[in-house]
Length: 354
Ligand code: PLP
Ligand code: COI
Image (spheres, rainbow, N blue to C red):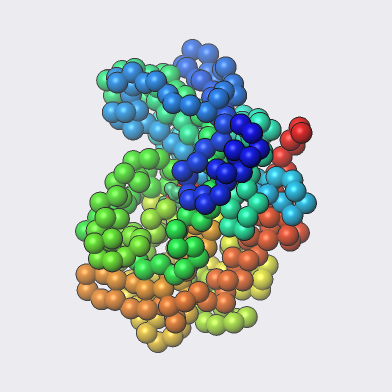
């Protein structure tokens, strides 16, 4: 594709709608393990209708970003952490674990071919989507003996079409995302499919996103849609940033982990704990809870401005983005874009041949 054609496609990007020219494919079978890693043109798959993933959803994925750097280069944010989570997700879904070096190599190969697709506009990046699925043709329920790994890439703008505006959330008391012993800590499509009806219910109540509560008491806050949640208590320099602890039913977000580190770097107290719906409401009412934000690769940091449930509704702080959320967001984006020192060695700089 010519540079002019590509530039045209890079204008007015939404999230995950435009794809680059190549993808990486690696095959696995029980007899030989991982083999035939290839860079191939991006294109449709031809699947036998009996392919196991279409029936039993044995599949996992990741989501990470490559950023255009201040010096013009390209760097991926914490791909090693995503590779490790991809392995853990695979293990939970009885899929073969892709070695971390192979995961990183797949990214290098794709970025070498498609680095010109990494956008440079603020809030834009190349979203990388590694995935693995049961490609064996069989209707019997068993861990697949044939599996396919694909890595695709999508130049993307902000996840929320309105940009970094506070979202309104719906507390779902009818549905649960995950239960102890289930697949909540794995990044697998079924978790998202199971959440769509609750998301539709949130939309019917005029909300942008659904907040998941624990499946037992429907009382303890877990996470939001495809993002983790953080709660800011107090104000200014003495603020405490709290995020729900990883109980096994939440996805261990890499943004969440990064913000716990950056929060400490900025001098905030940070904590992994528990927060109930009543604490959330009373904290907003008495002013002790000043900010709430969601965090994840796709959405970075998105403030939560307003909360609704079947029983109550309330505003968080002034309903706008707070100072702690803004400082944390800026600190994260600055590291990702190479505008601040990468003191935790989170960036992997792509070696692209020009
Ligand atoms: N929780 C869920 C359910 C998600 O889908 C995501 C997105 O990846 C996150 C949390 C945030 O994780 P990360 O920060 O690693 O993107
Ligand atoms: C991400 O933040 O990478 C996600 O996967 C969230 C959503 C797009 C599924």
